[in-house]
Length: 321
Image 1 (cartoon, rainbow, N blue to C red):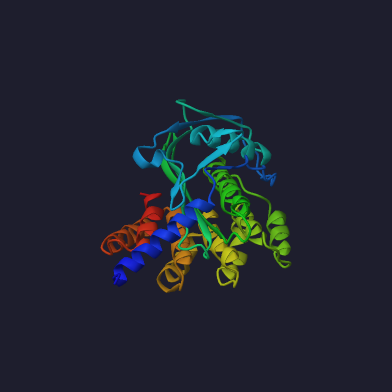
Image 2: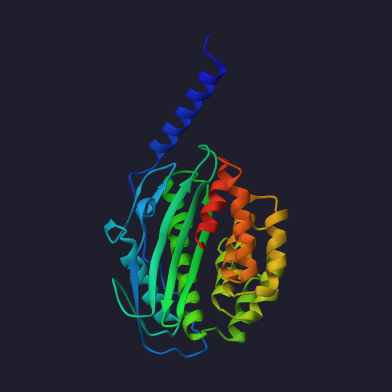
């Protein structure tokens, strides 16, 4: 008689074989469409260089349960080139005339530490999930600052794997570029959108659709503290992706006065993605207190060993340390 262990092992192997068989060998993704959400404050012409400092496994752009290659314009994604090209397009659309190029250059410089996507799927009936990680050290003549980005998305494919490309690959890549652009422009030039733009986006959220979470992120990308009250309200939203976009965006706009709220979300949230996004947002605040909190959570998580939620959370904290 076959043991229960053998049956479980066989079922797991069958499920993983089925998942792998369903996925193509490569996905063709798009260059993000620029947001055209102009900043209200002017910025000077600037040359920004992106220097690839990724090492080891960080150089693998797409990995996880389902192994595939991501291509853009017919070739595998070259992370520094992809980031440079699309970061320049996004900054230009927002009124920041920066020339961004991959390779060594003078300040300001973005030292690329991480830019990758990780996927996960528990069973053939569960969502295909992507985690997008992006981390740079922005170096200027006055010093260095760490900028991190973390996006989580999921989708259950009903008819084919083609259904996951837009929500779990294209949209997260677009959001990662837009978030980094907002942070670079905000840190370098104090760029922010007008109060009127914040009001327009907040009003738009009164009527919902499947992509409303993108408007929540857009509130964060305004770099305008007027968005904070709306974002705080949305951290309790019933829609998962609206909620985690709001949690993330509190960090993007630098809402340092919301650190206690973010700590509460981390400690009390019932699902992992809320807690992980709270960690990400706390990292964005970049204060001595937020850094100490992350260091303590890292130690606690490392003590948990092989728990997958802990392992993923450690990767999020790693974007800032």
